[in-house]
Image (cartoon, rainbow, N blue to C red; front, top):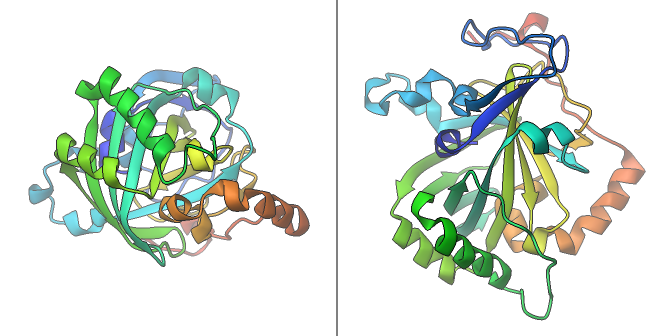
Amino acid sequence: MRESDARLAGESRVRLGPSAADAETDARHAPTAATSCEGIGRTCEGIRGPAYARDMSDNPDADQLEFEFERKFFVRELPGEVLEHGSRQVIVQAYLFAEDGYAVRVRIAFPDRQVDLPPFDDAIDFCGAYERRLLEKLLRSDGEGAAATIAVKSPAVAGERYEMEAELDLDVATQILRRAPNMILKNRHSLWYDEDGWEFDVFGGQNEGLIVAECERLAPVVGLRIPEFCVTEVSEDLRFTNDYLSKEPWRQWGGMYMTELAARGPHFMDLPGPQEGTDFA
């Protein structure tokens, strides 16, 4: 969930109840009302906070913004309130390099858009054909509003990952995606739960059937109130990174993972909040 995503998505907020608020939550995030949803149409800039609205050259701590702090969870189905109140966008991306968690990614995002995800056909949809076909459809219908970026990423450790992202010319990005074999296509939905912005990626094509939710903050995601829709945590499971999924898609190993999950049960990282002895000041 990077700055480019923040500019593209609108946000609503859902109240989970009393939360274990972290030290990085300040007066910018006033407590939500007791109603189930509020703030319909709020922009996703609130997820990253005012720092991402500033000129990076004027920010003495700009280097710190090249690290993202997020936690990811496997989800069986998209929550109803996300479909009803969440913002949406379509993302098509490819990986120019991806090895051991290090990756170089080119992405085109289509804001305020959701695309139907037809079933994957093994006979014609291999090597990115599925993703490229829908990309061409999106470019014809929504190309004027599309935004392109290039990003460099490192592996995640305890929910922290280096990511440098920059804008890219749309025509250049389009030509790269048209030639790339390792592609990802997904509908992304965004919604606030308590004080945290959540994003839900519903994958199509070779990763059809996979839904991943992630929560990101400006500091380590500790003391998190984990919603019930989170089946198990996959923050440190490289198989759930988009770069891995572009090469080893969910359709190839999802069934084995579900058997594995049933055998071992859910897992969540133990990351207590600052009130329990961790100081991020």
